[in-house]
Image (tube, rainbow, N blue to C red; front, side, top):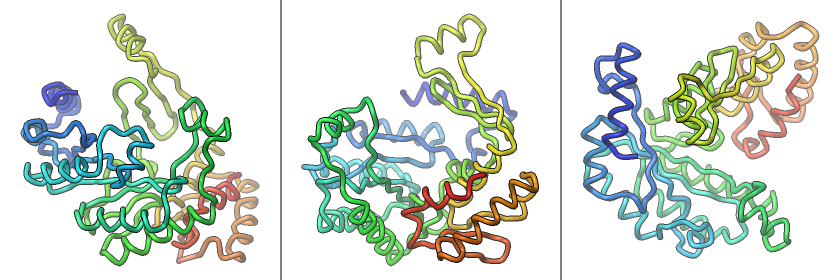
Length: 313
C-alpha cells in the first residue's frame, strides 16, 4: 500500500471519528519488510504522520533467511534499519524467530547480539509454529522437518529473556519486550480487553460483547462494499467466553490477572471451579499471587499456554 493510499485511509478515520489530525493518534504504526524499504518510501511515510515502524527481520543469519523463504538477507535487514533511523524514525520494532531446527544456541546468541547492537525501542520474538497448508507443514507431514524439542526451545526463550533484560528491555508480554515507555499501545489494547475496530479484508473487531471478522477475499470484500453490504462473520461471547478470554489475555501480560474484575464476570459455580484449579497451580509454583493479581512467573512464561488452559471454566 502506498503512502498516498494510507493517507486517504487516515483522513477518512479522522473525519469519521472527529479527530483533527493524525498528530492526535496515540500510535501510528506501519509494518514494513526490509526488502521493501527505501529512503523515499520512508520519508513519505513520515510525511503523512507515521511515527512507528514494525520491521519483520526474523533472523540475521542468511542461511536461515533463505530457508524461511525471505526475500531479504542480513545485510539488507541492517541497511533497512539504518535507513529508517536516517529518515527520523525514533520508535522501531524488530522481530526474531526461535525454536526451529536450524537454529543452534550459538547462532541464536549471535542473532540477539546483532539485534541489541541496533538498539530498537521494541522487540518481538516468536517460536516458529507448524501450520497446516504451509510449505513447512507439508515438510513436517512428510517427515522432512523436525522441530526443536520443547527443552531446546525453552533454553532459547530463556536466553532471550536474560539477554534482553540485561540490556535494559522490559518484558511486558509473553512475546514482547520494550525499552521503558515504548510498549506497543495497539497490542496492549488487545491484551487489556479494550474494544477495537478493524478495517479491511480479514480485519477483526471487538466491542466488548461481540467479536467479528471481515472476509479474507479482497474481491468478495470490495464487491460487498460496492453493493452496500458488509462481508463478515461474528460471534457473541457468552459469560464463559468472556471469563476465559480475560484469563488468557491477562496472563499473557507480566502485570497478570486481576482477580476482582474476573469474579464479576462469572457465576459462583464457575468461579469456585476456577479457584480450585488456581490453588493447585499456586501450590505447584506455576502461578504466584501478588496482592489482587495472579501472575505467571518469568521462568514459567514459556509454558503459559498450558497453565492458562488449566484455568478455563
